Image 1 (cartoon, rainbow, N blue to C red):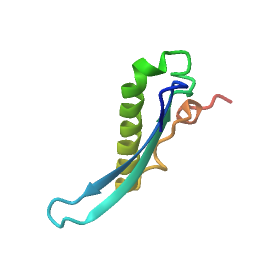
Image 2: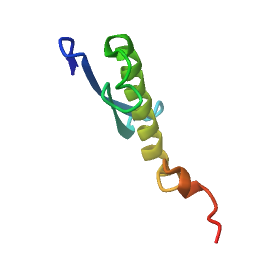
Image 3: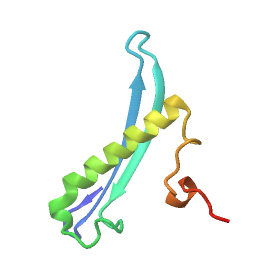
Image 4: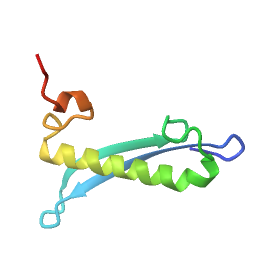
Length: 87
């Protein structure tokens, strides 16, 4: 979605991992990003629309890899989860 009048940009990207030998789909993933996310909302959306698109693509790639390797349980976005707890 590109709303040039309001300066709002939102992209959803679908990634597909295809096995070169068998030409079968191994995994799919989706990534989204928009100009109202905390990281981008105070910036000029017109200048960062390409950055937002690229971030959506990166998120789709990460989702594809996590799906293909079935490793999403190993990784966490929560910083506190990866630290040792002090009792």
